Amino acid sequence: MKQIGIFIFIVTSVLISMLHSGCTQNEWKYLFDGKTMKGWESPEEPASWQVEDSVLVAEGSGSCLWYTGDVSGHDFKNFIFEAEVKADSLANAGILFHTEYSESGSPAKGYECQIRNTAGNDAGRIMTGSLSGIRNLCKSPVRDGEWFSYRISVQGKTIRTWINDILIVDYTEPANPFRTDGTKRRRLDSGTFALVNHHAGSKVRFRNIRVKALPDNMPSSGTPLKDSVYSARLIKMAGKHIPLTDLHIHLKKGLTMEEALTHARKFGFTYGIAFNGGLKMYIETDDSLGKFLNAYQQPPQTWLAMQAEGREWMDMFSKKNISRFDYVFTDAMTWTNDKGMRMRLWMKEETEIGDPEDFMDQLVDRIVRIVSNEPINIYVNATYLPDEIAPGYDELWTEERMDKVIRALVDHHVAMEISARFKIPSATFIKRAKEAGVKFTFGTNNTGPDDLGRLEYCLDMVDDCGLTWQDFWFPDDQMKTKQQ
Ligand SMILES: [Zn+2]
Image 1: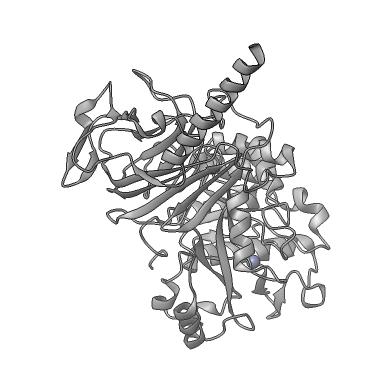
Image 2: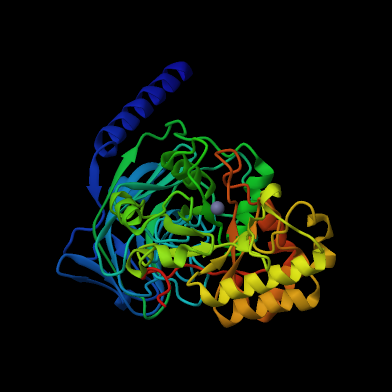
């Protein structure tokens, strides 16, 4: 009797689960009917969520709107979620999944996918497409006032986001993920969806909100980062809103755009991809610069940078073409010394040091001139010294010399790169510059695919110098380069 009972129980369970999956899995179900708030609840601020012309509009005080309707009993594990979204200027909102209904406060359980196209002054840069606090994208792939599609998928332990069908985040939760205090429940489980509008003054619209439930036993579609220590460190930084950007990468030594994007999705980095322009460089004439720009297909989750080389570049390219880059940077590694010798400091045979003190005075003078006269946004490979005198860095970079450079950076609103490749500037220099109000960027100036994203020195400097998200420089969200 007992065995028959168990048998019937098993058969019934299987039948129920088959029926369940047959009904709800692998087909799109709309969570918003386009007419009413049926299936949605906002216990705190119901008036902040309205339906207008088939669109769900969030406006008013910050609050959450929970899906409590019938689809899948508002409990989802593996799924594909889609919505069309439009955000007004300075909107700050999100889509939560694997979360749970609560009467008040912001939800602690589950993950948030961010909606924010223009950074305000309040909470760092967690832009549209980000998996908030875990994989923060620092550049929105879309602009304010335009409808875009938002897709989120969970398959096993893998979470992906797409904006306008472009894959942005590809995160696989490891077995014991590191989580900062206050985000311990940011873990995969199962749960419902919620929309969140973070503050008054933020207006966001949603339409065509739908979900396709996927089978519970799906395997992960990705893999976690192998280096769990680095992985934890990145999440700790993201939790502090430290922008995990690399504004100085080059597609070279076989590194393709697709590899760079794959890397960015997995690590949660935002890349600025730089092309060199200048005498004897990749782009040498304004005509070829124009052709390059016309042909370049910029992935919208990346920035496009011009690395201006040598001092001749200002006469070689038109302002019109230069302004088509998101930003421009240069270094002080190529200059002409007092004797009229054009030097490239990384080439021993082209560099004349002579008296190191005299060399340093000339170098500081050239840096100040470059920062003061050239229309650049970032001074990169900052404070670089030729190998021959590099061991004397701390003695040669006297306080007086540091302050001359720092003053020029502050006066001309030029940011300073922290170079992962050359491990410069020193912590002493960075602290002094921070104190004076200099803004920073991270750059690997990668030599190929292998050192892409190896930002360890930059992250060390965040810790050693107490940098916060306010200390960083970014290209303008809705504009191109600095106009002079
Ligand atoms: Zn470079």
